[in-house]
Image (cartoon, rainbow, N blue to C red):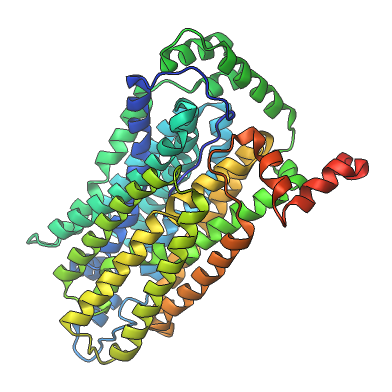
Length: 511
């Protein structure tokens, strides 16, 4: 999913720590940033299929949908303004990410999360009170700034507060909250679409105030992370907080490691230039490709526009919202599957299995729609409609236990400490960029490519599965600081980027 997030833990050593109530509460409060992001993703698709909303802001789309003779199965929602309503959020998030990378460093994780909460609150107010398209877009842009800030600060916060042994699972908590946000949004859309009167969409958009308040109040309650305090020179306060969240007095080894990591990170004067060094090339290529591939699975196209998509496929308005609620539930349950298997079956196994399942699901959808759903004729009966829904669910499930959480988790594990913060910014940037491109283009692509859009995504799934097979190494159970020795120097392809650094003094000076 477009949210996700990733951690930048200080290392692999398992220090003495209890799983304290403070850690659990802090992580749940911080994760509400994921809830907000998921809610934004889920709500926009449902709202854009509500006739009252379309009549108010997108009269041409409303006319296309309601007047006999103008109906088109694939092109009924092809409108750049309608797509901009959805995608403007991601464009704003893309820019905000880079600002947020500085605020997380200079002001801390806590303050950055508070800023995200405030952006969310103001953006929600604009959207719920909107009387014209400009207000709607301004609201979405403010929500996008919130997403950019939350996606930078929350995952960092989670990974730095969590004890090492549950860091992977807590990292996926952010993704789980995103999927819960999408599901809740789908259920609310289903409820508001049933209301009499023309203000159902205002309630849908306005209820985003609840996750926004959770994040805002949560960021006021939690303490900043020890890593952030120490990096800003507040040694004693950092040590005191570390004792509090670990629930033990002996935090000296972890404290010293955080101090050392913070000192090493300060020595990197140009983090983005450092990221381009030869020894960071494998990690950078994998991190960027995983973000691009995550979007090219077609998941966000299905999640943003699930109600619109099912309506296009001939499901009536109620049934389309109902169907997207089913896919939302599948998304949540499958993310829980990922939390269980990620440290047992390993990352590669989940990615490879899901690649096959996603590919087959999209091929079946392509064939059924190609035969039965022409632009002006819909022969998709009840039975085949259900079949399409089943395979959409199969696709969503396999994504949710693979590329969804792992598209963020793997980049968090592979960067060396000196490149990790810059690596995160680049990963979030590419994720938001491709989320924006897909959100802006999807309805037009659906109109012009028709059923072949699923074939387009299936081809990309095939490509990313080959990429996984040959180029993504297994990182399960390997401490972060041992990645170079145990992963990169042993990988059939990537080792050449490490060997030259080690064997060639001149290369070492340049690397």
